[in-house]
Figure (cartoon, rainbow, N blue to C red):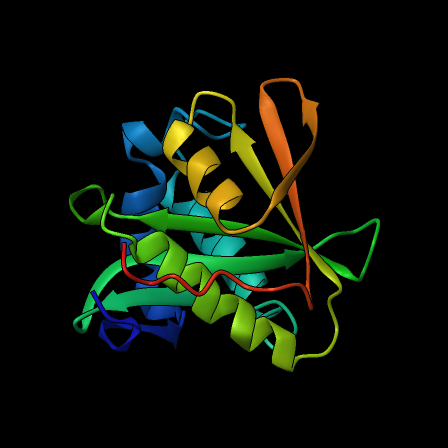
Length: 166
């Protein structure tokens, strides 16, 4: 698999229906704080507000061979403006192919260009073993636990994961 097969495109309001579908999947909700199904109205309002933040807080649709397979976004922390929280989703039929790692690497490379963030945190449900392995493989360090969530941290400027042969 080559990084050339992965690309990121800016999320737009036209992605609303697809994002809502992904968000409400049972396998996704199992690992989120709010396990309820989100209504289209709630989602539209959230997406509209979130897209207004895109210049400083990237939100991309992940493309694999030009097919939409997930999303990647970085959200600023309200407590620390130098901290970005990463959120990623890869569709079930494209998981375990190394696409998450490739996508995050590409996203971090773009995030660094903003010259705003110093570190990235990932919040991973303790039962989400695939995501735990992904972030650890990418050099994120487990810093603490909040209820059933593990908090990982990666300082920007540290060596990025370069092994794309997965």
